[in-house]
Length: 185
Image: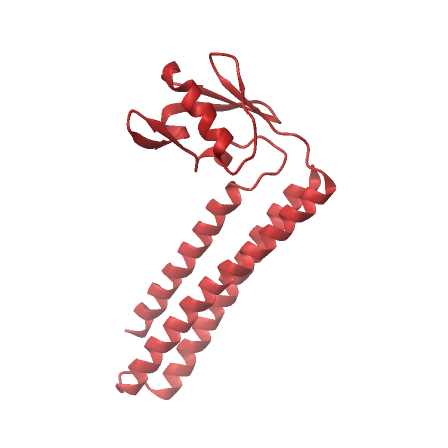
């Protein structure tokens, strides 16, 4: 019973890690990265579709992202969606494909992005700690119902803390890795 409480808490922590990884994929690093535009939706025959479902995305060069729609009639809609997105980029349209050219990041921009990554990691740590709190509350309820002893409660709370430390370290490592990517270019 208490092990299942730990397992469900660990699943919540894993979901936090996955959410952070998805978020990191959308951070600009000065390099062309197809994942950076996956969140942009385009009106395609009346429904909102992610770009990666209506176009092929490639990186012919390190700083250029090429977007080739499967249906050329949506090229203008695609261009407009990118212009209105949070990327603040103007795609180049040659009538066949769109090209996004990633300018090199300034030192100031790099520092700002690194700071945002760090802040995001801190926000994700709140999710991990929240999962730990839920685990501990469930364990205390089990102890109150006399399903586990006080010693077992303490043992499982220690395991809960070990899980928390493990996942917080993962978040820190992912954030440091992304910061290094941002600062290297």
